[in-house]
Length: 237
Image (cartoon, rainbow, N blue to C red; front, top):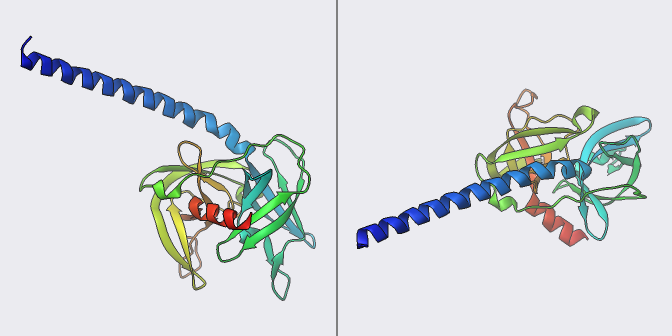
């Protein structure tokens, strides 16, 4: 067999091997995408905060740090009592498949970072912790998903793409590193996990922008990067 035929056979073998690897990767990747969504709902909760007969709604997600902890936005668990911002006296969480309300206690919060960590007073049911991914790996146009308690109507699944992987947004003279997406959100979506295609949490929904007239800017939403959430958890717990 001459050198040309040997070279041709080697090239063909490499092409076939690469094609098989690509097909297997895609198959495994699709399985991962398909499998994570059920657990995602078991790891996300509706949050209801109440004071003096008034209630607000939000979202939180569960991590495992020696037991279940709920990560959510600080602004969702705070209210103005007339003199200062303070934690709601009543915070409760509900899973998507039950009407049972579980009492929660805010253990740590940071208003500037807009992160709060809550603990269950007594959790006696199945729950699934969510995994925090690496937000530095996000790229323009990556598909992302979120689960949120939009307008207090219960947990719902939404999708979109990463518009800007990391942008510094100024809020009340505070620089807030954020992931910008095009996922539409409403009141109640705050604190909801933002997932990549493999079901890892790469952010937490935090806020949307308004224009100079106070109107919501459509097609933009901002999430706290998961790497900042991990840093806050490590220094708090």
